[in-house]
Length: 240
Ligand SMILES: N[C@@H](CCC(=O)N[C@@H](CS)C(=O)NCC(=O)O)C(=O)O
Image (cartoon, rainbow, N blue to C red; front, side, top):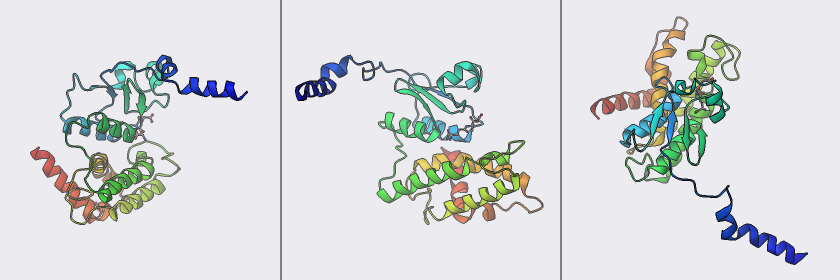
């Protein structure tokens, strides 16, 4: 009947019901644990946020290697992240895989501490999101071609094809990088800077091994704007 339906809806939305539901009950705050290793460029963006914001590695966040739980493929780790990948952030809101989501969660959770990694203009914020998205969709998905012993590398079954695609995708970043800089999206630091910097380090150190006779030319591979930014960030980083 209508009355029964109305009372059912009322019971679903009433605060009393929600307060007693285990799904919505407020969990106690906990110190989040980031499972990660310095070798991971995906995880590095999360660590850059932790370090740049000056978070306490004691009370704000703990950083532990997956080996503390027996490694990425151990039963204990897989119980937290069935994909067996790092980084992983364990919080009172759930176990969070995927470095982009972890990074945004950390920016939000610790928004009171600067830098915000959020530029003040809509255009720069959009460009940052776009650069992160292009990087995560098309570059990190095939980056294994620079270090994995064997294919497949993402959707590619040959190293040469994956390397060619990687270089093409690096090129696509170029048109979204700010003309003036010094950061990727302009005058202010954004999540894109934290996301792309560790990957360019990977590229600079590993891609030259697969050039097949061609001499390494960072400007040819990275493009003018990405290379200028990379040099500038390295200098800025060594001063901070
Ligand atoms: N899209 C994921 C990629 C995570 C990822 O592939 N992590 C690598 C380390 S950089 C990993 O855990 N590899 C081990 C495996 O896939 O078995 C992210 O951004 O976090």
